[in-house]
Image (cartoon, rainbow, N blue to C red; front, side, top):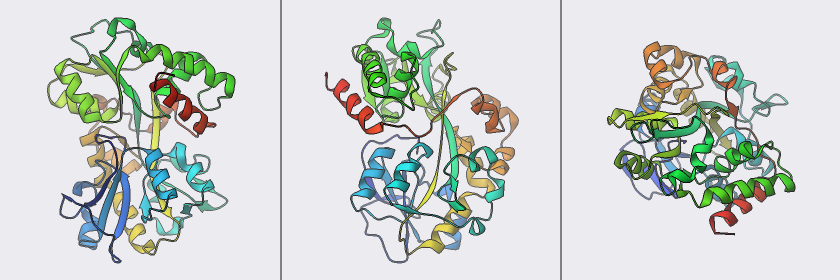
Length: 350
């Protein structure tokens, strides 16, 4: 999940009991491989009622970790990557197509997500989109009231040691690509070199590269950080705590992501997987996601259930088409392996 408040793999969360433990995958259980925060019981009450004790969740820290673990032999039933990684999962032969006829609320998913290239290909459904949100800057309005509404804030020497950025190839390097004036999704070697120069300039300014949003939120709350690249949920959480923050609308554009469910190839638990997906596409789980994490739901029914005042406070449109026209949509990143290697070199001081 884009909540990403934990770093590293945490295995075997038993969702029904809410306990974190290492557990073997039982034959009669669906193993759901997902982001931290997406395993909470509020998101699958109807599935739990239908199949008591039938869900075990294993958590990952980011998309790359999830892909690498499954490719190495980990064998869950259902995974929750993001759209920009879908082609990698398909090309590696890790997932199998699903039948739309078995997804009862497929038509309630916003067309803008159903129709994304590769989501449905040759009559085969490869991903069921479920959640969407933004990448932007959460900043302390009291500490930098004159903050430039630009991604350049995370490069500003005035805030050396006071900013943080996301440790992920499909976040920070993409922003660096935007600032470098290249197409961040189609970078050749020359473009990658330009982006590296931009990232090197940022390296001396940032305090931390991290996916641990809990640490970032604590640092923003204490004033140790004045700004950080985050997802929607961090700004929502901090505002609930009374911390004076704002979630920026950079003049270059926020970035928007969408994630969803993929069926791991050869799973013996297809029926449970469809029941789980259908439960998640009910109105209530998506509504809970919006109201508690500040992310958007793929279900139009879920979005309609949220009060307009709440959507306005969260800066979420009722229809994602509105947001996608103004933001940079995160899609497949070509040459991602080279970009990842370059990013690691930058962080290591190279």
